[in-house]
Image (tube, rainbow, N blue to C red):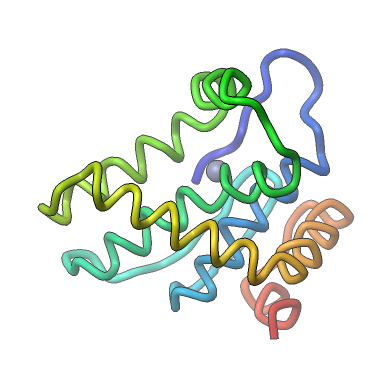
Amino acid sequence: MGPEKRTGGPPDRAVTAVHEAGHAVIAHLLGHAVIRASLDGVRTRYRHGDLYAYLCEAAIALAGPLAEQHYRPTTKAERRELSREFWHTDLDHARQHIAACGIDRRWLTRQVRVLVRALVREHWPTIERVAAALEQHGTLSGGEIDQLIA
Ligand SMILES: [Zn+2]
């Protein structure tokens, strides 16, 4: 999901940890193998070529920005700014995988966002736990993430 470069000053470690924990926890929940998570990004593995995998990839990509939004409410103007400065890699990734599904993109994007928001809300304690560990250690292995989520 790419490093979230924060050009306007030093990166906020807590926000970055929540963002990457969002990717990692939602990936785990959707059955994607989490190979490694760090404050620079999350590596996962999935099968290419099936619609479910594309939907999951889109959901996992959106989970970082949506975890951030759950952690720290933002105005529409702030979200526009964050989308341009920090979230564009995730949003592009989500767009590409939603386009690959071959279903009405606007509709599908809305559905995926609703799903991810619900998952983030429901699993917020887990995301906070993974974020705290990421903030402390910087990097977590797939096994360590499995243990934190279990
Ligand atoms: Zn991200």
